[in-house]
Length: 57
Length: 248
Image (cartoon, rainbow over all chains, first blue to last red; front, side, top):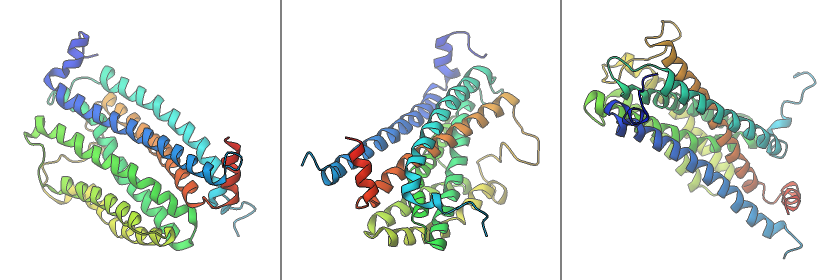
């Protein structure tokens, strides 16, 4: 292990903006894609329920 | 001819729809496990690089993202080509479902590469063959999505997209071999099938585990998207109506 403490870890040997900038954007975009897919599915099902739903119309 | 198994059974969107859900759940779970394992190896087991210090740790997402960007393009072109050749509806839907995730990984390869280039090369960007051909890959994904979005009839959109996807395949070997063919600022391949790896075993392990994580993520995301596309395109079908009623 390369780290003496958590602050060592977060400092990334002086490269914190580059390393964490890479990981944060990667994680953020993946979570965003997942959220968009869930919302897209929900939106489609709501529209389809209005068309095919029957008893609520 | 194909024995007793009906290979075309799963090419029906209706049959594939529930299968895709199960597969997406399992691959999504596997992706989470592999990401956690890969991050642990990458940050807590892999040693500091004696040349680049800690900046090299970007490798654990940069290389897997770059591999995925090329691999997903080939898979997308394969499904697009299969749709063109056999006229199977699901093939075109699979191609459309892969494009946004492929574009995401292409962007991430460029983004992480830029953040890695600044401290190691002294520049965010350089117009060398590797970086430029990867940027062209991003435009190919965008072009594919824009073309499909511009055509109302889904079958015609599939065919037009397939032609673009297949023509663009030529760019993938250009990206891959660019570091050998041209004198690039970008370094050569870190991993090759023929030579011994040029990095510590734990660094290599972290990279491979993250590559599997991104692969499983891509499968899960594409399957979730293809389920949306199936619902949209088959919205008039009886089985969709039945499916929607069971959700109430």
